[in-house]
Length: 139
Image 1 (cartoon, rainbow, N blue to C red):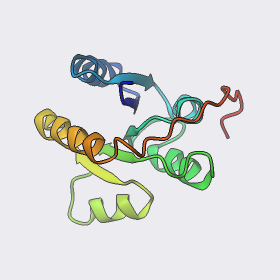
Image 2: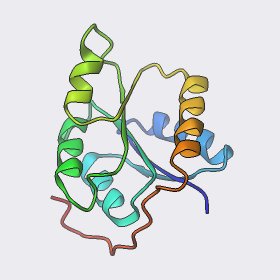
Image 3: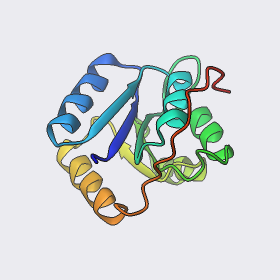
Image 4: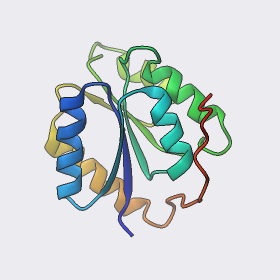
């Protein structure tokens, strides 16, 4: 079974780039153009990793992470922030809000892929595989 990665990113070009790259590397990829859809997909599929854009309209990545980490069904999911926040202290602030990892944009795709490979190598036996019906109410 291929590890599953959920990409929550409002920029369609970024979603496509990441989806194409990760699919080429053998991962199953789900993608969401906004936070609400991302929450629904996370609940329905329990991905092994979520790549979360922080700056999105309507619901930012911090709110999505707060909801996911506050829900017993999704709190154990691993969420890595993808963000343009690159000032001193930003990584600590983002991790304090619940993200398990941090990458600045523009992304270093080699570094991202290497860390994803290490993540799934280290967590291959712990990926959550619950089957849940899609919940139309994401909040």
